[in-house]
Structure formats: structure tokens, C-alpha cells
Amino acid sequence: MTIHPPGSPTDSLPDPPHHPSRHSPGTRRRTVRRLVVCLLVVGLIPAGISYGRALTYPGNASFLARTVDWVRASGGGPLVNLVENVVYRLRTPSTAPPAPASLPAAPAVPSASAPAPLAPLAGARTLPGEGLWQAGPPVSGHPSGLYTTFVRPDPGYPSVVAGVARFDQNLVAAHLVPGTKEPSGLGWPEGGQVPPALRPNLVATFNSGWKMADAQGGFLADGRTSDALRTGAASLVIDTGGRVTIGEWGRDVGPGPGVAAVRQNLALVIDGGRPVPGLDVNADNRFGSAKNQLQYTWRSGVGTDAAGNLVYVGGDQLTLRTLADALSAAGAVTAMELDIHGGMVDLFSYAHPAGGPPAGTLLLPTMPGPADRYLVPDQRDFFAITAR
Image 1 (cartoon, rainbow, N blue to C red):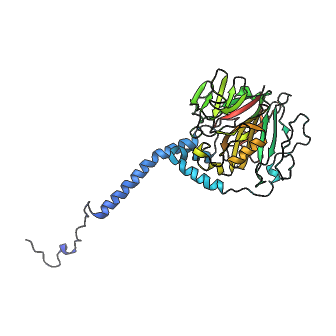
Image 2 (spheres, rainbow, N blue to C red):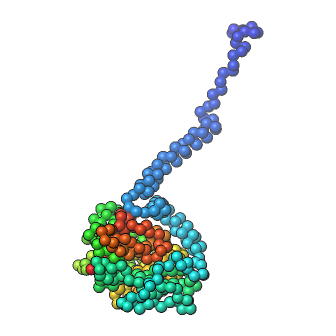
Image 3 (tube, one colour):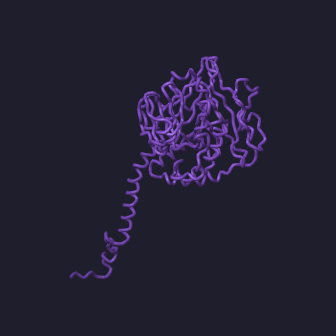
């Protein structure tokens, strides 16, 4: 053993560094944290890629609509339904009259050929233009077959306004146009917009139904069935001549050589001339997710009246019950709900300025638009109405 005298250089050497064991508790915690972070990053990469694709998918759709659709498709449907039920059921309408800016312009002089005015709500003061039909813009100098007006279907909330459009099916033809995403993605010949060949005679366009994943029904267009047609579903059927019939699939309407297109959505809301029982209950979720029927939100529906005219209704802060009441007030004897919520409900009528593209006007000034929707690629399927 070597003994170093005091004051030798070795007295100033530092103690050797302490190296903790790789199995110490601190080291293990750091390793676990790093592993968790790595797993989170790796796990989020596919979700980020999926969300990015949803935000950049071809076709018109708002950021909010793309995000909600992605959340639903990623398994978040129950959460979305819960949030919508809370948010929209809290949007109780005002009991005051509607703001004048929210109403369509009243016709200066009702046309002699216009249908009879719709009856106002019992006990409600009629607003300017309420229930009075206004003719749509002519097409190539001829009547378009379209008349529009508005009604207030909720006696408890006179601020609620529903726009109404009526099409004379002797003068118009209907077309079902698939979107870039609904019903089943790209590959449809129309490219998600009104085909150029239809635009010179375009009378109107309006939204279709729920996303096919939630519609409880099927879709047929362009000789192709993208989703199986379901017996018992509310069905809008277009024949090869462009005429619309609405009914329950398998009872009132069904397959045949004269069927050109079918759009199904949930269950009928008016049948035999009356709103169907159970609209407030929504037993078996036949009208969509539980409690959605009670939401005060944008809603739309379509029906036919006793004379065979096609009737569309759309408005904000409507429950399923008040939508059915508005359709009934507009004369529908058979009707179905279409899409719901802001950004999903709109009807455009079109003027045809010389040398220019069709110029759309919304049924209600408060409908979100955008103005060129359906004239450029849109993610959702829709209906185009043309003059015969």
C-alpha cells in the first residue's frame, strides 16, 4: 500500500463522480415519461394526418362542418350529439316579432296567377308579405314555376320564421346531384355542382338530407346505388321525367324502370295529410339521434301537396314539431325532414342576367349561403330544379 504524504497533489483531486444506477427510481420515471411522450406523438400522427385530409378534402364546406364531420367519423358522434343537444336546446327563441331584416322582401303587388295566400297563425298579426306568394325569376322569358313566401309556425315564439318554396311540377324538373363527399366520395359525373348543361334553365337549388351514415336510408343516382335503399324509410323519388314523389319506401314508392333517383332520410314527418304521431318523442330514434328533435336549430324539409306541387321549407330555431307544422301550413300532405343545423340549410332561386352565370338569391336573408354554393363543387349532395 502506498502512503502519500500530507500536502501531496492527490489531496486536491475531486471525488470521483457518482453514476446512479440505470435501475434507480428517478431514471425509471424519466424513461417512462419519455416513452409515454413518444407513444402519444406516434399515436397522434395518424389522427393529425386524418384531420388534415378532412380539412383539405375537395368541395365546399366550412371549417366547423369539416371538423364536426371528422370528429363524428373518428368515433366522437355521441359527444357531438351531447354538445348539440345542450347548445341548441338552450337557444330558446324570442317572443318578440322577427327583425324586419330577417324577412324576405314583400311582393309589391301580388301576382294574379299566384296561389292563394297561406293562412297566418291564429291570433298573430300578419307581417308584411307573410303568407303572400312571390313569383320566382322567369327563365328564358317564361314563368319559372316557383313561388316563395314565409310563415311563422310556432304560436309560442312569433320570432320564428320559416321560408317556403312551392314548385309547379308541370313546369319544373328535379335532379339529385351527389356531392364530392356525400354520399360516397368522388367519382360522380356532376363533380358536386350543377352541371353546365342544366344552368341555362336553372330555377333553384336546395340542400338534401343528413349524411348517409346517419340518414337511416339509401341513395340512388346516375344509375348507381351508393347506399342500400331501406324499406320503411322516408324517400324522395325522382322519375325519369324529373317529377318528384315522396313516400315511405316499400309502401308508397319503390323500385321500377321509371325511377331515376332516390334520396332517403329518416322517417316521414307528415303522412296522410297530418304530422305523424311521436315527433316530440322520437321513439327508436327514427328521426335521428335522441333528443335532436327538441333542438331549436336550422331545419329543412320537403313534401308534396294535394295538387302534386313540390314544397320546401327551411328556417332557424325550428324543432322537428314546428318544422312539420310549417310544412303542413304550406300545404304538404306527405313530407320528410332534410338536413339540419347552420350551414346545411339553404335554398337559392336564380335570375339569369344576360351573358352572365345564374345569380342566386336565398329563400331567407338569414340563410348562411355562400352565394355560389352548388355552382361550385360542394361536399354534400343536393337537389337542382330546372325549367322544363
